Image (cartoon, rainbow, N blue to C red; front, side):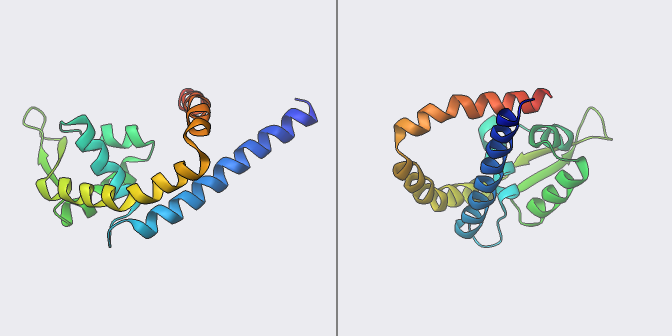
Length: 146
């Protein structure tokens, strides 16, 4: 790899990592008290798919270990945001569903996040965001398959 391509790659990943950290900090500040980004992400996923998922399916979807997902799910269950039940077909497995309280918490989080995200997109400009989205999607797809 030439030095120019190497420097470009390092700069790209440096920018992505820095943007990720800054975004996570901003999101954490506006989420409802006690809610972490991982909690919101799981609630949002469950609301979006509209059906139960196993902890293993959730761990896979978020590219985290089963232990990390179990920790997040335990916190969400304690808060009353998810229901966890045994799988009726295989008692060794559990099924996770978003609760009504979880849907409400997700909606509160979205209400808190929306002004901040809209401000960022507004400052960047819709055209720039539309231009960069396909590149970010392709990068994500490459990283998922690699």
